[in-house]
Length: 228
Image (cartoon, rainbow, N blue to C red; front, side, top):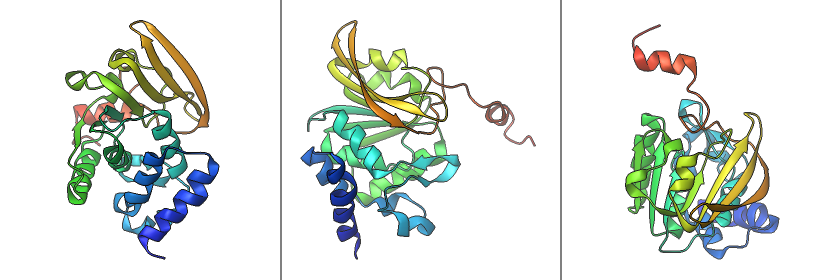
């Protein structure tokens, strides 16, 4: 089975059959080669419905969860979208096939650069990436029609809420470190938000001023990169 056949099978058996209906999301999942965003030793697992490890102790999320989040964001083709937690770049690639412009923030510089190279190689030119604290969003590019957060936080960061247009949607895992609820927050007026609970998920943690605190050892390395 070649890659295109594997993607079609994944979409039909793991995503559409489980209730994802947005045709643009399904088309993007059929188009973007997931194996291009993982290490060679994991390529044989690329189209299984499971998260896979990537560098820096992070993961590429399972395809069904990614598709669920993209559908929940209710994306239009001319939307400007912010993604928090670029990771391998896979979700940003999918977003680039659905929305007009994608901004993506990643905490780890090595992941940012690797994702940038993958997206460039695939010709996905409507994605802009940077390294930084994603819990603060990307104020210079705001406002956004949609924000998707690919990491779980203890609360919804106020900065992200403020960077939505009225009518904009924020999809984010919120809860404890070991399990979160996937929340869709819709800004219905300047200071009014509606919230939908989309079910239980498990993501790596959102680290930053609007999320979990930086691990102590990471802070030490940042101050003294040559320390042991």
